[in-house]
Length: 259
Image 1 (cartoon, rainbow, N blue to C red):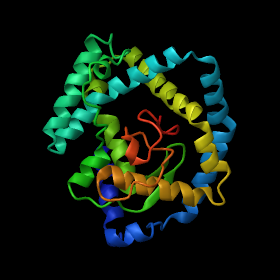
Image 2: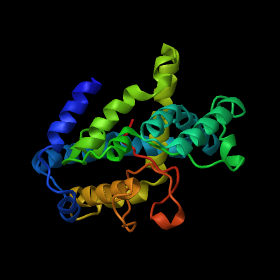
Image 3: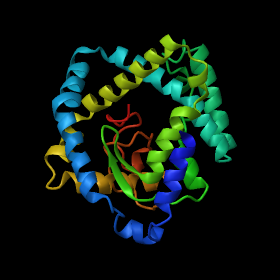
């Protein structure tokens, strides 16, 4: 599966224009199918994700939401450590390791974010898209995926690889997998409910929600990777922790489609 994803990535990126041109005008050769997927995602959000998220937000106590989000975040750290190692980022790998160690022990399996209370560095959120960028792979065409939302061909392939790169996937027993999936779903619902007004303004109040989503995703993804100097765009799907000057809403804002 990983080999197929990487092969598709290389093929897709092989015919993309110069990166400087891509920044000026998004490379969107699949716009017709992307717009169909975007319409599907909006319909899914309107019919299922949004009402469920609003209910989750309304009836789930804040403390429980925080515990679920902490648990899901802690489970993602080993995968981030692997990506940091692949990027040659020893500092990030080490900080994520200690954060995972502290939260998994003192934090009762990651239910409590003790590491933040102790003033430890923020998690890196390193992923395989970032790893490929570090290796010099171009982002490829813009795509919007059913359910998963906006991406590039490189990011889409990275998501596939990230499914297999987390060492915990190979040691968690079957019951644990269901708990992990449930935690990820809860984390996404929390984000969709918590920042509903912002997401609604993009999806349902924009003159062209597809174009706004595309621009926001690409600008913020490039800023996160360090390939753009702009920090004036807000991506309602971005999950990366930010400082107040980086233009994002919150450190724990997450992609409601990324389950």
